[in-house]
Image 1 (cartoon, rainbow, N blue to C red):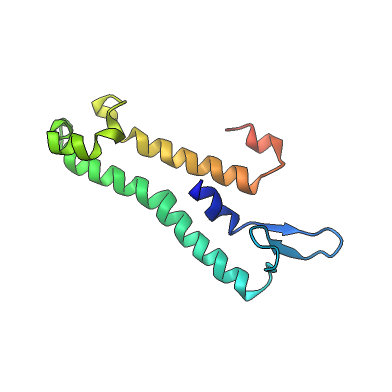
Image 2 (spheres, rainbow, N blue to C red):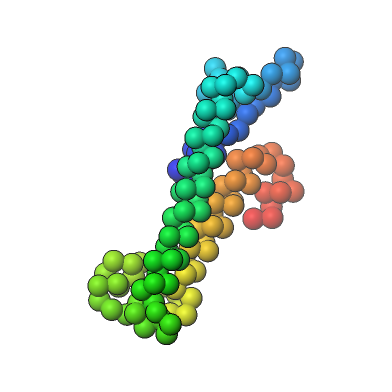
Length: 124
């Protein structure tokens, strides 16, 4: 839900009769205005921090705890803290939840920016 809200801060809606575009999240903000640039830039930062930063940090953290053989993930301290991220997967695929998070972010991006274009939405 958060990724959808962040993505809508970048999406503009073009009014056919006037040719003007407005921010879909707040139709008072014209997409050619500096205020839109401020919101769009903020949304881009959070989109990448949240959408890429959390999964990447998850992979880095789990990889550090796993060690070369992956057995570090079996320690009680690690299982209690991070076990929910990898408990449903094979030990050699402890990072798979992060891949799923990337995929969800991609789905949100496609659904928000390709809304109404069935050929793109059916790919996911």
